[in-house]
Image 1 (cartoon, rainbow, N blue to C red):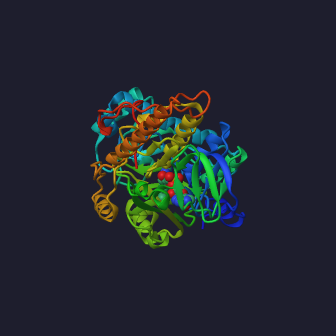
Image 2: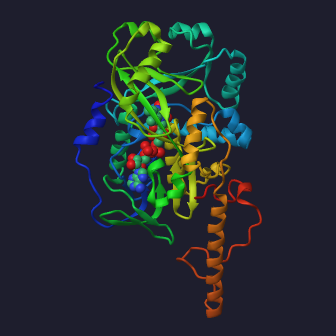
Image 3: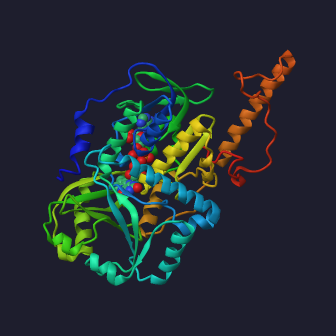
Length: 485
Ligand SMILES: Cc1cc2nc3c(=O)[nH]c(=O)nc-3n(C[C@H](O)[C@H](O)[C@H](O)COP(=O)(O)OP(=O)(O)OC[C@H]3O[C@@H](n4cnc5c(N)ncnc54)[C@H](O)[C@@H]3O)c2cc1C
């Protein structure tokens, strides 16, 4: 087992005494889930001065966030060309810029001083499984010129100089992308959030929420919490608090292994120092702890013990780098990511004070950090940039049938961006109900001669909203909320 890559997470997850919520509590913001998303939001909001309570059903980084490779890239799971096609160049550029800010958030926090042993190193190489040099040139130009992202195109020879395999052809080098010890990072985030004043309670599953009203109620088995804002950052395991939200995510479990020490020869065969990922999203690897190889490859749409896939990882390494021979797998780990049907994360306000941050898929480091910044800054500063996610509605992922289809899609290596069905109507129903309630209230006030009710001094009077004519799918940033349950 790799010392460097397991010691802190074991110690923090296992030996540190976990605080459970056993008393009733009030906070400005209640975050459900202590993964990368929940902790990024907690850190940012606590730094901006909010009182924050994080409720985690198991322990910090229990799922994907504590079992990932720590590669930090700009962008999203949805390929850039598809993003532009979907929302146009201008908005795609803004979203891309936000994703870069997310990566910078990670870089700024993942310092040796903040997180001892976090091991930041620069450079990520994306390699092509097919000889597609022509396509590469236009992509490079677009990234450099339109998206202000430093990238270099590598010819086949240069790729094969640093990776001794004939599986890979051209490459795109991101010199400013970087990697950290992914399994340490989530615990480092938790420590920083605590230092900023956030309170984190583990072994505290949220069993229900009541999100109506200004002060929302959150119920756990041993205590209740009241908060003005709830952030749902539970990924695919959210469950009871808002089951229909979990159903908009396709769970994809991913597995990775770390080999036993391979000696100096590994550097002759893999001379690239940063992370390598292939353009089909199948393999993702890098050298860790001097001479071990950390390799992520198999994925399933059901959860399994990572150890079951040690043989598959071993075969994959032998297949790509036969010169390494039969490597020994010393450690396996994995977790379930939540994949949306459209490939973009779910970031935004479902209804007043109820926020969602999930669906980060296989690129969760920068995107969950971005969600943390967007949501905390919207709550505390009124920054409305999360509305750029408006075009990406919550779409049902198809339940059990969806999962089977997802596995088939995965097998054939194609990403699905076709919507299985929309929950947008549900959101519209919620809005209609809200409007009806407000209209009844205004009517009652008129009848009583009290005029429109004020929520508190300085708050504008509550008046019935004017009827809306456009369907939610046609919503534009700044006019409608982007997502619904
Ligand atoms: C093997 C592997 C390698 C990866 N490598 C990379 C990589 O190199 N770079 C990258 O960018 N991304 C990577 N990812 C993806 C990344 O790990 C995820 O996108 C990210 O961790 C998702 O974070 P999250 O906070 O949304 O979810 P999670 O990590 O699932 O956290 C959600 C938390 O919420 C808790 N929770 C759920 N429901 C409740 C409830 N009702 N009450 C209380 N708590 C609740 C859960 O217990 C869980 O701890 C990888 C993933 C895997 C599995």
